[in-house]
Amino acid sequence: MRTKSTKKNKINVVTLGCSKNVYDSEVLMGQLKANGKEVVHEDANDDGNIVVINTCGFIGDAKEESINTILHFVNKKESGEVDKVFVTGCLSERYKPDLEKEISNVDQYFGTHDLPNLLKALEADYKHELIGERLTTTPKHYAYLKIAEGCDRPCSFCAIPLMRGGHISTPMEEIVIEAEKLAKKGVKELILIAQDLTYYGLDIYKKRALADLLKELVKVEGIEWIRLHYAFPSGFPLDVLDVMKNESKVCNYLDIPLQHINTELLRSMKRGTTSAKTRKLLDQFREKVPNMAVRTTLIVGYPGETEEQFEELKQFVKDSKFERMGCFAYSHEENTSAFDLIDDVPEEVKQKRVADLMEIQAQVSFELNQEKVGKTYQCIFDRKEGDHFIGRTEFDSPDVDNDVLVDATKHYIQVGQFIDIKITEATDFDLYGEPTISS
Image 1 (cartoon, rainbow, N blue to C red):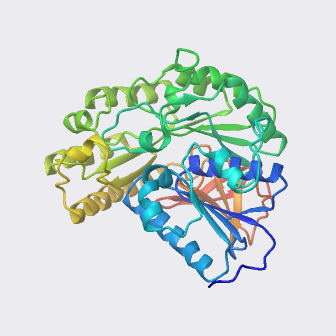
Image 2 (image 1 turned 180 degrees about the vertical axis):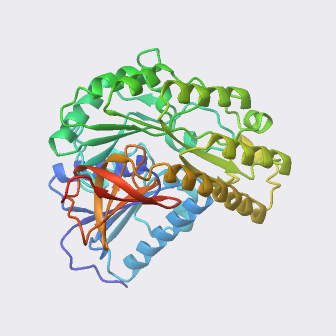
Image 3 (image 1 turned 90 degrees about the horizontal axis):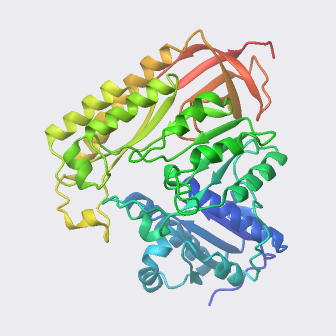
């Protein structure tokens, strides 16, 4: 029989998956702190006798990582290093009965909408008055701001509606309050997130209200950058581009996963658009905001994707010259409509297609970065790493986009500050530069 640890109660929250999970963990931690609980986030020494794992269940690799993490802490529980293990998030929402059967030594499983029940299990009360109160886990100068939960889109490959439910917009006034509280804590950059930003407001205001929200957020004193993540190409509200063009605080940056360019596959994916409409939308982006950085994500190996269709996608990437791009192999997910299709593209073919697309993108990125050499950009600096301070331009989001590196042996830069940097050198995905004012 294992012995109970002698540690004082400390809750270690472990977050897996996307920025929306990061946000949810921060809200959980804020609630726990308000209840007087000692809480840490992903403690390097696993220093917590109570562990809460916020899981991801999006695609195969993410599910595997979540399961391995659960097993890691269950083993710690068996050896007496941990007293309790709780699991929440998307994987738990989607596979709770299976998980309870297969990994029974977890104390309790919770879904994505079970925060009050999870808090109760942690001997804490859910405090409704804590609008905008959370313990941020990002560097103090930027924070994610979730403006909606769930998704109403019918994409055939995506299990997120199964895990997150339908789209629910957060009222504008609550978002502004949260932004104001973040600004008072020193946050300078807001990264707006939702499963679909462009759907914001349809449920509560009966219209697409993202542009209206941006006009309110730019009024928040202390916020300097507002960045848009996860737009949807079908029904994109073009008034957002006007706000982006006219409001200096709104970064000339948009993350808009397009998934593919072949019309036949887009229809099978239930994306509500065509190749021609997608290309027209990108043209409108470039026309309205010529210096916008467009980040997209593409899927390869979707059921039935032929070599000809993949070649069409490759040419699209070459022609579009996306400033930023990611790519992943199709994952056959049960209970999605695409699961009824035959997953007929072999895994090795999928992985080769991923590599081929990213090789094209590396060349595109290299060429675009070379054009930046000799120019000066305002950058915000996130951290010091080795002999370099690491920063970003307004065209780059943390963790997924290009870095700007400044030699720390020659210059000192205060993390969290905006500095004008002259670019002196560029590679595929990194820029090197020097402050325009001696530091």
